Length: 232
Image (cartoon, rainbow, N blue to C red; front, side):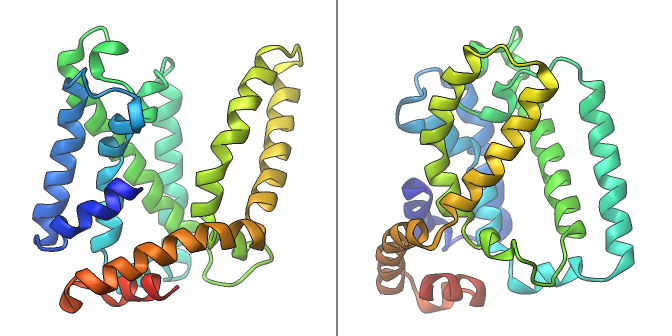
């Protein structure tokens, strides 16, 4: 995250199309560099960089498209169906296709096609994100507040997942019971990490970064969406 924030000092000077293409190129290229490993999550920083850059460049009005009633819901359901069918047909999906934590040669039989595979994964993931936005409601629900704290949940859940992996490896629960247990546990973990106290801890770090952006980034480079995030 810190790497991405620092990268904005360069990318905010670039036209959006150029910035997204460069971030995508870096994401595809880093898989061919075996010396860029899991240390400091360097591979993952570059692999997921395009998502961050795209979100940075998108104006606020972009999300108004997804609130157009039944037509967007129909589009969302259709895309989810297509996406599920594609993933279902891909019987053997290597987890590192989506983890982005290893170089191509570490998990692919033919690493030369690594960039092509990663590009396909990007297309599927963007399809999933697009369909998700089509399905979500613009009305506030009891769980809406947890959606505003996804950064805190994302940053802290890893510590729990590490222990959970060890626990699952030593359990003999049937598959369906294990899945239900994980879903229930994930729900309560989200509620816990979405607690205001946990959010306040993460907010202190965001506040410091926000002050840096306000001080050093030109005012014209900060869109309304970015300005509102900085103020928070």
